[in-house]
Image 1 (cartoon, helix red, strand yellow):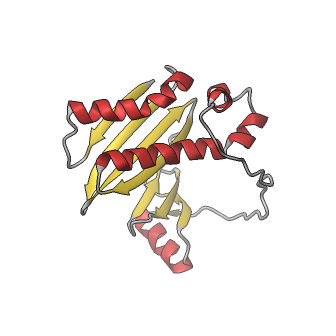
Image 2 (cartoon, rainbow, N blue to C red):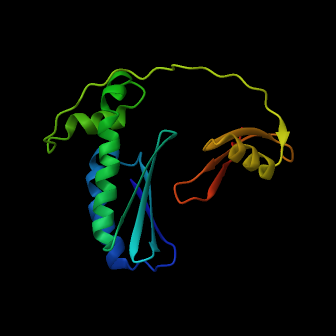
Length: 180
């Protein structure tokens, strides 16, 4: 398992990095060399924001937490990431052959004392078709705001590729530019 730690606006010392690796070691025995974790830490006001991203077989899992103490934020983020993996258990068990590492992790985890709620399978309830119009990202942002949506799909007139502009939780905007 590969763990990369990055600090933005903060220096991560060897002692802190060792503690983070120690907290992440619970995933090591299940994912082995397959998983790649990226841990980012940044201060935001009086709190520390910890973001952990797991890349596994072209799948990405991400969790983020905030706390005044870095290690508490790391604990919360690890718990969130583990919770996301557990939540997907019923879906993943149906597709065991596609996700053997996560399925094995969930099967072998004997420390869990929780019950799973079986949820109905998600299904597409509505389909919408629309024409992609070439426009700039600024035009797409304006169009998204006028529609009152929190995302907008458009054809970028400069790159001639399909892009998505979206509103982030912090009030700023993000741009997804797929590479295909």
